[in-house]
Length: 245
Length: 223
Ligand SMILES: Nc1ncnc2c1ncn2[C@@H]1O[C@H](COP(=O)(O)OP(=O)(O)OP(=O)(O)O)[C@@H](O)[C@H]1O
Ligand SMILES: [Mg+2]
Image 1 (tube, protein in one colour):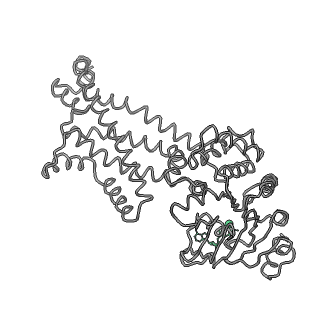
Image 2: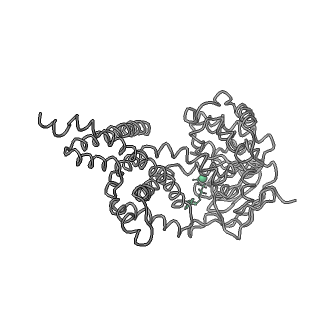
């Protein structure tokens, strides 16, 4: 059987600029993959291609659960299976926290209001903000908002969760609470692809670390290899820059 | 006291009051119908302008620019006096409503576009990532947020539409202004005209005040 997420020769152009230069990547079910690399290396672009928030070249192929990620009907199926958490939370400001979590199940899955509300409350309790369900996002701290965003994505019961620097917009004292939720999630068997600068999280939680630079995967392997004993000079340079700052 | 006799003649006003009220009713009907039709047209145009294929987008832009440039009076006269030459004969009410709607639609299209474009890209991305369709994204996420942004300018536009209904008197629409000028001729006294002006002001002042209040509130919040 093929990998759960399979990426073949992924190329992405912004105009004439090649942001991804032919990425090949297989992610197994339940695997937690952390993507690291310098700014502009294409990390966000890579994970945004997985649910096709970014269109990519026709000669590239991405499959999720064996469904090709192409425009059309199949894309809706893929997106229902792939949850995403953004650096800037992107909660819906006109809806309460509970309604944020309920919206997609109700509209996409046709879940009843009562059932969606029960599920939302369960998920909000799970990420530790059961008490805030009736508030609007603007009244929550950044860490709480990001946990709502995680609950909102989980409400669609995704097979894969994509995280694009989920803690980079947070005040330092709130990073921990979000990473804790993600660590719990990794323990439940959800496949996760996490773009992060949190090397501690990557080394503890990741099954595999991918180092990217200039639109290419430079090095990939278990965290104690890539993060502690990198083979490639570019990985070494990046890590020493990160650790010394 | 001659001034009062001339411009605010109570006896004349009392006598012509029913005529003015009839006119007001026509003005209200024409204003309301044109505002609603203009909103529908504007929403439709803004969607095409933002999301349709390029040729259609260019076409709506052309439409919007033309109908924001043409003087309403000119358009109204074309609709009422020129269209009959190609066999299209509209009643004064239909002519006025057509002209008002075509122009109001162009303005509201731009208002809706600006409102939608003010919504951060992340809202579209979060919706797409959750699997919401384009229609669901619009109805459940984008439009509810855009509405708050567009209400003050839409109210402004509605005020303008109601004001512009007065132009319909040139195509023999028995609206408030027309009735007032007729009453003035009948009574040989300008008091009905003053009465009409006061009615326009009394009718629109609350809306003007509402827009100012909303703009102050939104302004205060965004700062
Ligand atoms: N919409 C766009 N238009 C043009 N170029 C873009 C666009 N988005 C990204 N790029 C370019 O593509 C490259 C990869 O961008 P990407 O956002 O994937 O980097 P990243 O690794 O996520 O960086 P960061 O750590 O800063 O988030 C960069 O050089 C960036 O300038
Ligand atoms: Mg990025």
